[in-house]
Amino acid sequence: MDLSSRLLQLVGVVAVASISLIASDGLSKPAGGTVAGVISVKGGIPKGVVVYLENVPGTPPTPKNATIRQREKQFEPPLTIVVKGTTVDFPNEDKIFHNVFSVSRPARFDLGLYKSGTAKSVEMKRTGTVDVYCNIHPDMVAKVKVLDNAYYTITDAQGRFAIDGIPEGEYPIVAWLPSGDEAKGTVKVAGGVTAQVKLEVAAATKPTSHTRKDGTPYGRYK
Image (cartoon, rainbow, N blue to C red; front, side):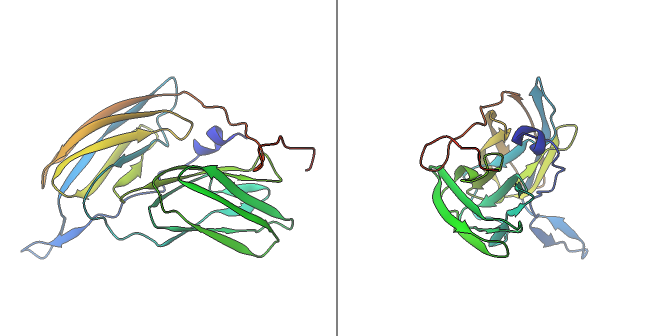
């Protein structure tokens, strides 16, 4: 199964945590405003599109670590979304050696060969898309999307999304399809108000073939 197909299996597992205030009646209510809407995918399925805001001041609390497991010669999960500064752990849960690497500009790394039951880690210091591979097994492919804040979510099966607790202001908004395409817009956020957004991305699929870390083709190793 290729990366595009595996990504479409994602159910909205990533949701931004809302910042809350306590109202005078003792009930919790979201601080800031909300951005909601529908993302359509021309020629494809709207489920699994990543929607995020850029240049938002401050950010909700986020985990300092994320985990991408090596299991049955696959990366699990195939897509991970983190905020800049997060450390991603790569535990090897197979009974064979793996060599995790990336040559993507936001994070270039080579973790070298390591055995079952051990793990290595990488801090994601720059925003962007990080393509992750194994130098031994060409079918092992994953993506890490590194954002500058935690105001993001993933669309449901109908392409719907909502992001809460956003500080007032005007921000770029991006709908990103992990298989390759993205659409951008601008949204104005006001406290206590839901701003509606509609964007469309094309179901373009970028080539998934890649070389080993030294630029040479993969051999016959299984």
